[in-house]
Length: 582
Image (cartoon, rainbow, N blue to C red; front, side):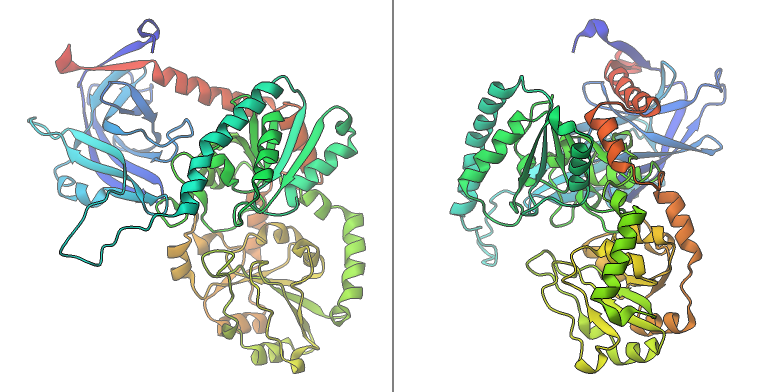
């Protein structure tokens, strides 16, 4: 750091700032602070709160809410302190500033001192072999109670307990060792190709490491680029392989690495594990075209500390941008990816372009009634929950919870029920022959969105399929029989009951009663749509192309991104000098 460019800030300790309360919500750390400053000469200048490290530099600036009476609520995402990284290792003070003045370093209230240990947190990651700890304590050797926050990432160590034979050494894995040892070589391959193809321009890669083919948002954007004739100006490449779940031949590693090295823009649609350790050239723009809308399930950094969560350095950190349906829901995605809200662009979901096309809709409805004639003249209930289990290999759905006989009776002459399970659930729906005049297993139908066109009632649980379906304006029921278990194992990134756009039921009896009484709480659907969609049109693919590929971001978004960059640069120029050191 060039000291000539730094801004020296003396911590005057001219007021008293006290941390009264520490709380957590997932990865969000919240302090409640009281500032006593009776002779404030500049009340119109807002206060700013910084984490200040041992080298007297600002590590992070808190988001804040004024509570009145000199009280403030400060919030910090510990997985993203503003620069798409975790709060760094070290010891921190909490300093309150006003303009270019540092007023005080925070102390701990006497009532909170005994609760500091309980407020500390450990976040396990990397298969529970590593941990990121945040500890709070009071600095010793002072007449006051100076607040200290200590951050430390640590790894599992081989401590041996001879008296406890239950502790066994983890067996060495040849496969795991080979996978890790080849990474330096593959990084060198990337650097070789990147040097060779650095001068390439207008090369775009659509890449998935989850599936054998492209789909959803990626396919929609690529198709639209070709419709606009952009394949004449841009080299468009694809890479699709299920590398996240299956071993891949070495040949495919060279192929995908070469394509990444050749590309200026890489569109991904999900977590791409190769990017957890393959660090791309900064000139390469990685853009996350997330495959799902906005459901309830936590993923990525929103479930940090849970099994399967990402490491501090992961693929998500390489995203230049992500996309969302609206600016209001950008925080849902930025939390998952560990990036700033401003980097989540409210383009809308490209796959919805076709979904909202009236000609496509008309043709699909005709096709659906021909394929499922049992639906003609009936109202259609679509039963479409997500899977249970830890992953694709263990995925299932507890069909025993469905009372097929009573559901059949409730349908009467009014309804038929289509069952569309999550693609990972391998077991067919156990529909008895006597129910097949009203119940249909549609698992083999490829696109659930098409089914929404003639669906009158959706029954789901925590799935993001509510995102597209909400645009139909029709009612939904939520069968959340395992909400407590699911919230613990997977987690929710927003309050479930408050956010579900329909009636939440906890037993199948409640589902049957709601259907019979048409008790759907349908008024929630409109509010959901208003919150989740800035655009309801067929132009989302064009916005992705114009804003990202052609770099024509709206001025407002560009200004917001610039403001974040400027604020981070200004913060790092601040060097705090505490009064006793002057």
